[in-house]
Length: 345
Image (cartoon, rainbow, N blue to C red):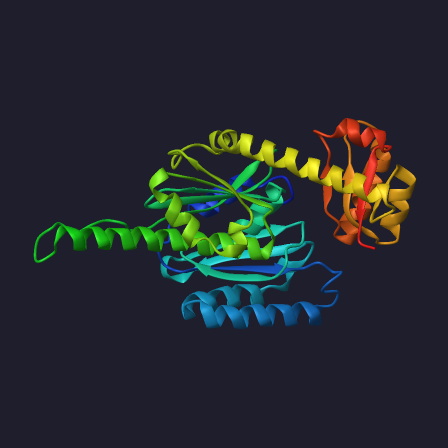
């Protein structure tokens, strides 16, 4: 069964929900993202080279029937690539699933084999932001990414965690050790998936929502790169909560982190300006420095000079420069002409 859809930035949450609910009975799912951005792959030959590398990796990591089916579909009709910025394919031959999504936006090439469709790149398009949220229980997990405006779920999975009845030679201690190991394996799976998403597109902050009994296990299990961005572990049972309820739960953590970030950036700019260091302020100066690719981080406001802000943000996007909208420190930014920047050199 082949189904497909077209989605674009800011839309497509229904597509994600539909794909996330594909019935695969725990069989491996192959997720392939093909980048069709003409700036990086300007010719059919360049695109075919990328596709060949992705399919080679798929054949190494996915079950053979699934890899072959995905390859046959991708190679069978060149017209599927026309007019798209990227293409995502999710396949599982064991249960006759082949789902395709054409996107207007580009997504870097990626191959993932997991027990669930890997939707994190799509969630990042729908909910831009540098936050990750993991809702973890002893048996289930739900992973989100996004920001203060919206978070989008990109993976939901359940693991078999149960104990055997204390009979047939099993002692209660052995039973408890077996259950504890199943829980630990479940948490390791959560940590692996979070790290995969973090390495594709870095999180600035991670919030975990979990029972108190799992806190120490989660802290021990997270990779060091995730430990550095862990903003907090909230103790709550939100395994079955809707996304908006989860967003409300983490909102205070996000607000506190954003206040701290703005304060640190403002202090860094002020300190550098005092000594003629790597900072700049004022619309004209910041725009000129953006043109010369000297800006490391751009700070803008929401309240004035919308055309100039739009131009600055567009310049920053072309150069891969992070943009911070100073909401809590808007008055501070106004005193600097509505624009500030931390410089590379």
